[in-house]
Image (cartoon, rainbow over all chains, first blue to last red; front, top):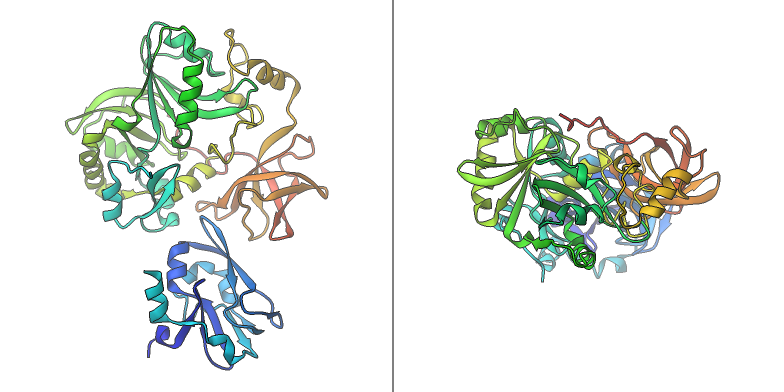
Length: 124
Length: 366
C-alpha cells in the first residue's frame, strides 16, 4: 500500500496518517502549488490544538501560508530537521516530510476527512 | 476579461503555472522560481513581458511635452538613448515609473507598467493642452521579449546582432533572424541583457528561435516569480509595492535619477525640489532579516519600540540566501545603514538590519 493510500486529507491540503501517534503533514499537491519552500515554523512538543486551528506556518518564495490541524490533539513530536531544511519538502512531503506527530486524537475527527483519491478528485 | 499575450500558448505548452497579473494571464513559473532566478544570474533567461505598455509620442512639441511630465530632462536625452523616469502628479506622488527612449528628433517611445497604462494615458492626454503631439498607444500591437543574464550577449551575437556599439540604456532598430525589431540594452534584473520590441505576429517565431539558439548557453524561460526576486535583489522598485501616488521619487530613494538643475517646470516640481533641499518625512531602506523569518509586503516596521513604517517588498534572496526587504521608515538619522529595526511577523517582532541597496552587485552597466 503506497503512502497516499493510507492518508486522509482536508480540503485545505493537510493530511493525517492514522495511528498512535497520528502523523500530520501537507499533501504533495499543496507543496507543488506553493513552489520552492523556503521557511517552515512548527509548534512545540506539548502544544495542544483543536481541529482547524493554525499550528504551523509555511512560506514559499512567493507567499506565506498557514497550516491547519486536520484533527484535535497534543503535539508529541515535531520534525525539526525540516525547519532547518524546508526545501526538502519539495522532494518528499510524506515519509521524511511529515510535520508533527499528534496524540489524543478522537475518532470523530476523521469522519469529514477525504481519502487521497477523493481529495484529488475534489481538486479537479 | 483577462488578456493574453501572443505567447500565451507557448507558456502553457512549456508547462508554466499561469496567474492573473495586472489584468493579464501570465506565467509565474515554469519549473521553480529559485532555479529560474539562478539561470538568469548565471546564464541567460527569456521573459515574455508583452503585458507592458508601449506608447509612442511624436510631433513638433514632443520633447517639450514629455519634459513637463517627468522630473528628468528630456531635452538632454540623445538619439537612441533611454532614461529611467517617473510620472509624478501635481503633489510629486507617482502615477507610474517609465523608461523613455528617444527614437528620433521629435519621436519617443514610453514603456510603462501594465497595471498603470490606463492611468498613465489619462494623465498624459490631460496634460496635452494645445501642444502639437501625437500620443499613440501601441501596447496591443507589440510584444516585448527580455533576454537577461551574463550570457545574453553571447546569445545575441550568435543570432547575428552586433552589440559592439550598443551601451546600456540605448535602443537601436535592427533586424534579427529576418525580423524587424527595436533592441534595447535594458532590463529589470540587475543583469546585462536586452529587451526586444517586436510586432505581435513575429513574437512566436522570435521566442522559439531565442530558446533554440540559447540552448548552448543554458537558456530557460523565466516567469514573473523570478522576475520579482531578481528585481528585488537589484533593489529595483515595483510600482504598486514600492511606488504609489502618495510617494515622491525623493522619498523612494530615486534622487539619483532627478536632475537638480532642470530649468523647465514639470508636475510636482515644487514639492520634489523642496524635498531635495529640506528632506522628506519618510525614506526607503533596504533590510536584511537577522533570523529565518521573511518580511512581506504590508508588515509593520518598528524602531526603538515604536512603529516607524512598513515593508513594501520582501523575499528570500536566491543569490545570497538572506531574507531581504524594502521598507519605508521615518526619515530618522538613527535609522541608517547598520542600524537594527524590527519587523512584526505573525504578532512577533523580528530583528532586521538596515543595509545598503542593492542587495547584490549589479552587472548591467556596460
